[in-house]
Image (tube, rainbow, N blue to C red; front, top):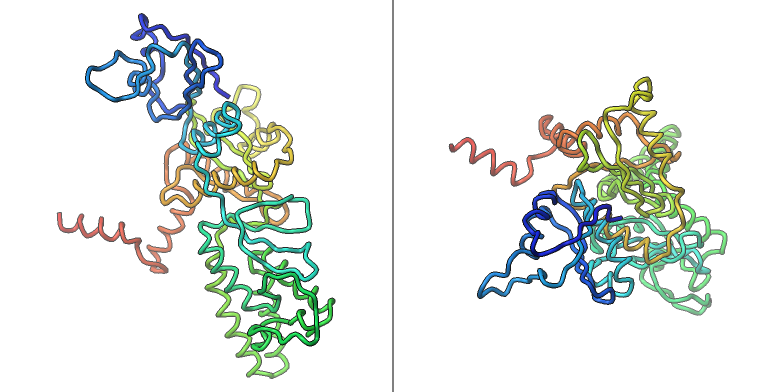
Length: 406
């Protein structure tokens, strides 16, 4: 993980500092005592950080100084904050297997959980992941628990599965709840439906989450067209109202939210190497990488297209292994932290329903990341602003007004 190692001696500090790059990196400092706890961190400027930690002790200062304790420096240059964060996570996980979670300060990603192992399945919000190969299904990551709850509750208004959390023991004498009285639940609690009817409704809910809402949109559209064809215009109008009500709910659905066992993508990040970018592979929510991709092909590869070279690099990733549930949660926390950042560096490209990556978009994304341009999502947003489909963000408006006043 940490590719460079330098022996530190206080009498040669100027020579050592000069040889260390003034660039982003993850580093580890060790002392003579093998049992002593090492110092691990990331920085935007490794040389400056080491000069502060290992330079001559200043008088009357409380700054941390390890000059007399450190005997070796291990580090790895990085090209982006995402790469630094993920590499720091791997180093801490190996160095401090019992306390790395507290050091990383993880905030696990909210997910929608479909409890299919229950006799009467239901949906809930969780941050804990069970076995991805089990019967229960997980959808995420969402930006916040509030966003996940709003999307789930607004979506379930179109279905009739139960909202209660208790294990049900159907009894015809049970009075039911407000959802059954409002005809918003099939009421399995008092045998208001057969098991097959409830199972069919659960399958509709699963298809809805699997398709990002498209299954229900297609269902409503087909019902509306059928009603119009049979001249039942009032029914068609009512279905159209439901379809219009569904659209803003689907607008809440972030592109990255997928069923976890189908969450596969490619993340492209800047690289510390010249004329290169860095690839990270997402498979079932777990992060693999980094792998460097050089823009300029080698002599024997000049006849290959950029797309074929990208595919060759993706094939060079080691085979994805099933990660433990806790490791998957940690990777999702890192992915969520980066993806929902206001101005993130790098781009992400998700696989489609057939498991295929958008290679043409990826090639254009590589060029943008190499040149340091804004991501594809920002460019689409700018186009919508120019066409009058959406308004400028607040900070853009303020900047524009300041420019006019000047």
